[in-house]
Structure formats: C-alpha cells, structure tokens
Amino acid sequence: MPWHKGKADTFAPTNAVSRKPYRGINVPSLWAAAQKRGYGSGLSLRAEAQQHWKNLEQAVIAHNPYALVNSAASLSEALLRQFLAVPGPNGENFGAMLDRLKTELEKKKSAFSLIGYHFMQTVRIMHQSTQHPGRVAATGRPIRPGLALTMAEGIVEVLTSVGMIQ
Image (tube, rainbow, N blue to C red; front, top):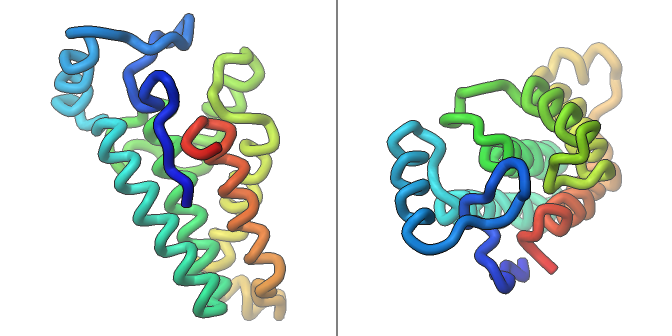
C-alpha cells in the first residue's frame, strides 16, 4: 500500500471549521489532550490502517471473502473513529458512525467522499452477513469471491478520499 505523507501531515490535528491543520506547539498539546480522552493519535491510526490493509491483502491471497469483508469493515471503522473523533474502539457502532458521516457530508464538512460513504454502507451490510452465518444459511447466498474483491477497490477509494494514499 503506498502510504504517504503530504506537505502537511495527514494526521495533524485540524480545525473543525476551516479544516486547516494546526501547527507548532498546538499539535503535541492537542495530541496529548486527545490521547488522554481516548481518541488516539494519527500515528496509531496509520499503524492500525496498515495492519487492517495487511489483513485485507492476506484475505485476497487466501481467497477468503469473509476475512476480506471483515478487514474492510475494521479499516472503515478505524477511519471513521479517527475522522469523526469517536473515542475508543467501542465509542459508537459502525452504523451510527456512518449516520454521523452522512450528516457531515450533507453539511459539506467531511474529508470523505460521497462514494466512500456509500462504499462503507455496502461494507457494513456485507459485514453483517459475515457476522451472522444464520443469515447466509437462510438466504442460501454466501458472499461470492468476486463481490468480496470489490471491498479492496472500495477501500482504496476511501483511503484516497481522506488523503492516506495517492
């Protein structure tokens, strides 16, 4: 995955209104305050995102559509927690975070693209199927490998929209 840093660090704290990154002594002060409140830092997001991407790649290599969907969901949730400033991994569920993202998109105050939002909604729906095998058995329709592979393409779109990859 071509992780990169732009001219300004993607994970520098940003002003919620102007979306401009803070600079100077404000940055470590804000990171310390965020970590104290359980938000984590951009550096931990980068490490978490890289681990989820690695899991996604392994799922593709192993031809495991369920693991691929689970990795896409984990990565999407990690990104939403960071960009929506949701404290901790259990702060809000995936659906609630997507509702918040939709509101931000409607107000044009989001780093995510509209297509990224819709993709993550698809991930959420597919993830529900992988977490509840009874639903798969009831419908008789397991996740097809080709459909699961769209998760990798969609994640690339989401990561591009938030500036994590070029």
